Length: 382
Image (cartoon, rainbow, N blue to C red; front, top):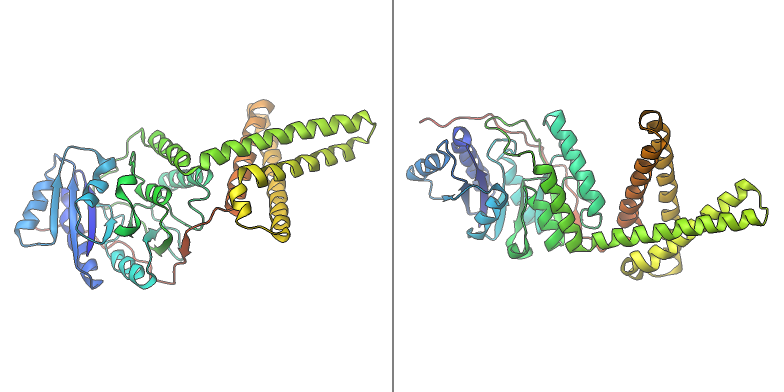
């Protein structure tokens, strides 16, 4: 059985159309299903509208009414669901209900633990407003920096449209404190087989965003909590310590060679090379020791060194470019600080993802499935 959770707050104009189209898509998958609307005491009568739909004979429709707390609405629904597959989607038609058919079939065909409806996989695209695209991109970049070992290989870890096998996710382990439940599941439960299905994300056809001014702060707190729980924050701290040791090696080596009257350019180059070698050794044996031990052998070590060296050069380029572009506007000290931060973030994320990757979940690549756009909103007759 599939249990689909639809959280609502002031969704009366579109709830009938959403649940009916979702029911049609789930029925087309050939599986039994239920749809649970979790309504946070909507003052517009969304709950009463769902009760009207139930009275018309929609036996697959359930309603949970409760005080407003959108961050836990979906988990509340899952905890009372009966299905072996659990799913969630929004009620404003930004998530096209027809995509559910492809998601369920992908789960069964690929035996996936999680299937994500992605705005960026394959031929998918997003019709969201420019500001939302920017904010989503910033959130994805922050998640990639703080959770590099968790999100490797996924195109849309910020999606709010997904389903998963109940047996693969421990609901009691989730600590929802925002609206990004998928990243919570991926980080805390580490489901081993994850797949994506492309879809077109459109502007909402009814209602308005429920996100408030504190969403960004809440999301950052969630990421930091997940980074601490998964050990990624510890790796970042160790990576920083190793980097500081490299600074000491660089300065000491350069000062020693200048003391011995070595030419300026060769001294600087050799000091930098020694610092890079020091940093590689530190990360190999301290920061990412478990990942290095999982891939032993001289060839693997050499491969990791050259990757680390290449990423270090790119980080140096990012630092230099930031200083050059920002110094005229904000001064050299702030520009240098931002450049170092940018280079450090790049170096950690790139190396944690590609040089010393943690054993990752199996990412089942999306096939060339049809990309489904939202159907036109059809209001139910009153």
